[in-house]
Length: 368
Image (cartoon, rainbow, N blue to C red; front, side, top):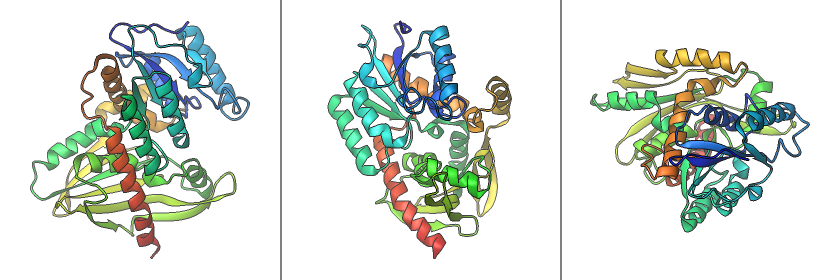
């Protein structure tokens, strides 16, 4: 029998656990099982791939081991489909945390609504295309279901501190920098390009675009100019594991100026390391920088490395922010609390619109 939430908790259905140590869904599960989010109780996991066709393939045995441990130690129940879930517990609200492949999200959202979820936490970018995400937004609104997004950088410390500092400096310019730890080889980047085939701006850099939409008045209609930094940026065509070719940015830097007079820059590098940061410049000189992880976070990172050896490094540096977003969404679902700073699906739609607008524009500038 599944765990029973207390009166101030919602029951959580994790949809798309993924492979232990690698899948974002797995890390969500780890945090929930560790009681890191007081308003949430993980009751169910829905994992169609590793409990189905992927059970014997790479990651399958590791998932099976995680499943057995979670069932034995926490009573979590595992299913292959949302339609197999039992009824919602009396007096409780159900939250679906959808963390599967982006292409599966539209289907999962529909099924979560049918499974009587009263709120949905949707991992970025939400859907492969603007049209699909808009349709999901409309479907949820019709059903009266809240959809909030896993854009954790909207609530993270380095973004807040940079924005606060910039607000005190006349004529300041903010650059949000996102780095990842892929090896700078055709094999590593080719695998990355194929697995994240929606492209960098819809995947790795989508968090930064959500910041621009949330805080800098960036919409497709309000963009005045977009300028790529050709010296920094790189766009490659590489073969993935399937031998198909994929064209994407391995690193990109650009500046957007809006019609309302705001300017902001984004820099993303798949092979740039495990530190992301925001910097503030005045007259071209850097006057402020705050990094993630900072000194306070680095101690936590070391603890988590010991606890989960071999896990994706970015889990650890963003660990506190993942907790904040989940807790605020769960508290909204369970107790109707205000989910301060959490991106809505409306923001996600505009963010995806901006990503689709920028991608061909930037590729054209770089390949010109």
